[in-house]
Image (cartoon, helix red, strand yellow):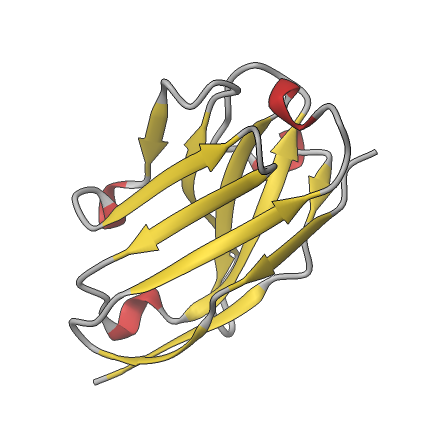
Length: 124
């Protein structure tokens, strides 16, 4: 069982930065791949980024490549999403998720644990 709690969301102007964090409970955190997903108002859930169990492999959706960076700390049981050059299209609730596998996936239903989410609002 893994419990996930996100933090770090907020209101930021276009061009600004935010760093999201996801704290995970449980001693088996390093055995899970982790992902970040987002859901904007009136839209479906969208894959943002994923990282493998060791942190050596990351992948991103095209719209955030070069702007967002996912990382993890297996000692502190944390996953982070550094978001730079934010624009209003990035406004959404951001959730972290854990996949019981070595590598992440772009497919939401392959993740077994989800956090409640943190709101990110980017003003123009």
